[in-house]
Length: 322
Ligand code: COA
Image 1 (cartoon, rainbow, N blue to C red):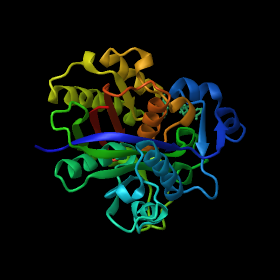
Image 2: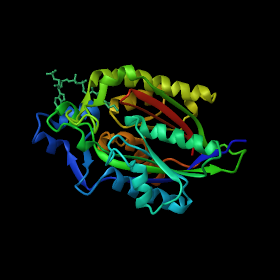
Image 3: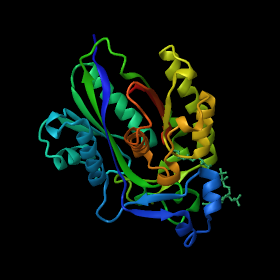
Image 4: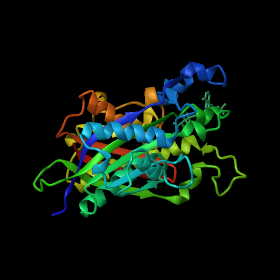
């Protein structure tokens, strides 16, 4: 029988510098009131000159390993979800391997924008279930402060920097009920121009800035996340009432509350960090998980539904019994 993937370690890292809405309003035509009512965001952490996708991801990984009681020697694969790598290559995963002192195993990056952590976790699950990997480090690490246009009030106020990580381990308990139950991934490139970064190393003449049609992305997020939730539960023959926790991608409180309401979950069963972190893209779910596991809200054995939508468009879900 295929092994189950257990989430056994959790870690997060947020850069030191905190920037409030009020501070942004001193240099942009915006206000705390506008940002808060439209998005739920009050502040965000922004990377300092020494912070990078590699440094932040490595620190989150160290904390997750520590939580799991494992060392880098135990890890077989490092998967990093990021759309803000330090370099086009080597992959951030490989840089993090080196930062952790690993010369064994393998690592690679996954580019699925804000859905990246869901895609990376699903990939780790497949490696584990196939028997190829015993322990995986799955990391989301992002420095969107380096790709947003700080003159564009419609986008720059929405994002923050940070990293989150989980350790996923194969369970030998074949009759166990814990572990990842199902993963569902989607992408549709015909909607690629709704949320994208204008250029990259292959197109150095472009701005390199994040561009977004906010209203369209909002509309897609509500519809696609809603069907994603149904898909995840139906696949396991579960109902909304079975879900103990929703740990969603943290883009906008109105989208998060919409999915929470659909599930009939009281607000205190939905993990929210967007108010303090803003949208940290692929880092948002592992950061939220880390917070809620460490403060004792999410307990072993509870059913957790994670979902995300991002540029691509990409979207998907992971259902896990912790
Ligand atoms: N401060 C003040 N006004 C702002 C502003 C800001 N930071 N950003 C935009 N505005 C203005 C616009 O210029 C526009 O003014 P106008 O009517 O005079 O042209 C007005 O506010 C409304 O803009 P609009 O973009 O239509 O607002 P909205 O209600 O759609 O809210 C978002 C904008 C971005 C908050 C919302 O569309 C959203 O959350 N979309 C999803 C984004 C997302 O989640 N992206 C990441 C997915 S991973």
